[in-house]
Length: 164
Length: 421
Ligand SMILES: Cc1cc2nc3c(=O)[nH]c(=O)nc-3n(C[C@H](O)[C@H](O)[C@H](O)COP(=O)(O)OP(=O)(O)OC[C@H]3O[C@@H](n4cnc5c(N)ncnc54)[C@H](O)[C@@H]3O)c2cc1C
Figure 1 (cartoon, rainbow over the protein chains, first blue to last red):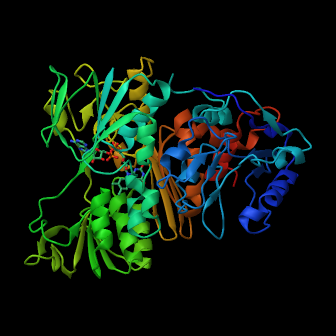
Figure 2: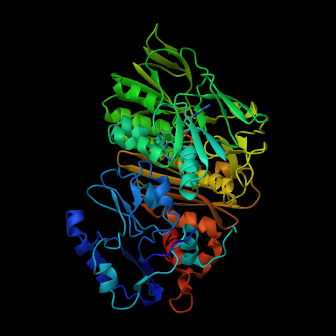
């Protein structure tokens, strides 16, 4: 089952690791985070120096999101714009959502121990700040079919699936 | 069509609500042995420890059932199934007919045959009602029998409540089905660090006390206590299925549509034996995410969509105080009977620990504590894709931005394994 909705797409080949997206995210969410900490961004960039490759990493809001199913206290939930977020009034900081994520996306708040993922700047009419900030076209919005966990896993590796 | 679901747990509710969301015409009825709407057993230890309020233990409210036209029959335990008459009978003598029956009654707490295990002061935390009794009990010293995930979580909760806590494990290390020895021993050391007494390779022989528990006698010591928590595992409820002549193994046997061997009877959740999604071997993982997925498959098949269940996922976490650990796939013990060359890659950095189990160069399992655990999802994905680690190891340094734009996960994997170093 797939639904069409707006979501983030990443193109690592275009990412220059300028970190404008992570700054934008940290600023946008600093009120919720209770601190302005550039490391506390819901989007991360992994830099691999030997290969000169930069891989942005962000929650893909998988269609059959496994984090929702493994959360022991039912704190992971899908909001109306399709994003999957952590309800901090329930989260006990057990990291189950971090472990099961096919891309390793949820960030852990250093003080509360609770997890954070991309909410696509919910309710902000301007749209996701990271997309606005990205000058390279590495982050875009698309309204194609949403990803399933299988595609999230496979897109990352472009490997054959084991099951039909 | 009347769909009757036995068990108001995770799997049963998934069936009922998926059915009702997709098709309003079916008559849906859930028979529940308990008297409350659906709750999450996974949050019970946190409810016990005070981290989760009672209202947040529930996954459903009474209104949800009404809104979805689902009838809920409380406090009735189904005792037999007559597949000829298509009728079930409960312990209160209630008889209910069905067109399609779903067995979603989970598992039962395994109570080991220990002398004195029926005394006052002995609890479990498998069900809400039991957990509430333990929560309102006032004691000062508790012995937890069994160091599986539930035992560990219960021990943490009791420690937080101010108890002196002992965990007794028969095996040589804690969490023995989920972690191999090195990780198990590190986790035990961490528990000791939080002031919980961990006793491994130790067998509980007797529970003493005239009416109320006064001590637990093991083959090594006698521990004075006023509270005992039984956490020795959950056994799939197969007895009920056998009253209908349904084939059972370790659990109720089902095909890929989650149908049992008897027509019009499906089964899902902790009571079934399925296959491991990655290896195809028979598996009984008894985890929430599997119960949810199986429930969805049952509902779709009842609705006539031909959906196949691909298998269950072995994934679990262990979390107490500031210690975080995760495990997936096979442990090295689990590979003992497998053909092929197994290899273990270990990394250690202070309290952080990573152990990846490879078979013929492919990831088949892993365990991690601390920082390494946060990237374990990438290893799970590698297991799924059957990434060849040997290939990644030899090619890692030469993966380039322009030539291999699709190999990002492999870059991250190579990084975890430290191939570049
Ligand atoms: C303390 C605890 C912690 C856990 N933590 C985790 C975790 O962190 N992660 C994870 O993945 N899994 C965890 N689990 C396992 C997870 O809860 C189960 O896999 C899941 O609940 C299985 O769902 P189910 O619907 O098959 O069974 P259940 O949720 O157990 O539901 C079965 C229901 O059927 C009812 N019933 C039984 N017999 C009958 C009968 N004859 N007639 C009518 N009703 C009947 C029972 O009362 C029960 O309500 C935990 C379990 C426990 C007990």
